[in-house]
Image (cartoon, rainbow, N blue to C red):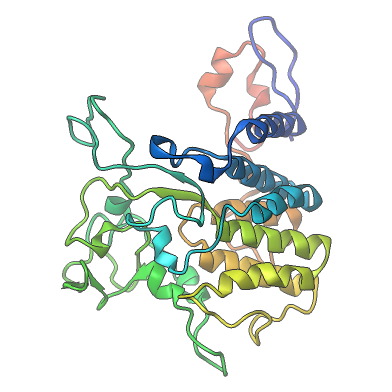
Length: 345
């Protein structure tokens, strides 16, 4: 738990978790009141944080605290705003050609027009944001980040009368034998770095249209998508009103034009009660939002609420609930001492 240290004229004492959240919600409330709707942005303003982005962040913060009723109004405003919808093609959310599309609630703008020096030692002249994700994750590049086999196996497969394989497997992952570079090249054991038994990430990979990854990429990173909003809405409705109210939202995500997975309930994922719907929502968030830096926060909040069916991280320890306070922050703040450090560090 967070505690308050003795006050000092030269330092800022530690405050409670509730006070931190109060500041977060105050900032977001101010942002919501001042930011315009997404579709009012034009020219170089396209991609800036919008009212919908702030509302989605407020909903996420409330969900992290298990405050489902408080999150619902923010999500309803996004859904009813007319600003957002799912794109027909899943991969339009992770390639260069359809950035800032109607599914994007908030995305970080990247560009390969990096400036006058290399990406690692840019001098700041004409510099733009750039991402190294292609290089880090790329199957033919460094391949430092690999999907886990449990994630890969989470996707629904044809078995026991299931209707179809989940096509998001091929949208999310490259495997040996897959083509890239517009179909001109084939992934083989010879050109894939490291363990070939594991799949590689396809999201945000520039090799869908070129033969190799560069050390930098201009593909924008989608921080919040409308699919995430719909799945948050399903979760809220399940907790506030029950599973039948959640079905329309979660099934919208399943019904994307190039996904077309069978609607819930299914034989594998029944949704007759709140607990079963929680399992379906947790599954759908995992497969829809894979590799989008969302899963960890989902696990943390579900763990806190006691709604995980089992612990997905075998080496998790209670102390990981909070990060350590850097020693330099304690040393530079006369209102803090080592006793203010988070438990376990």
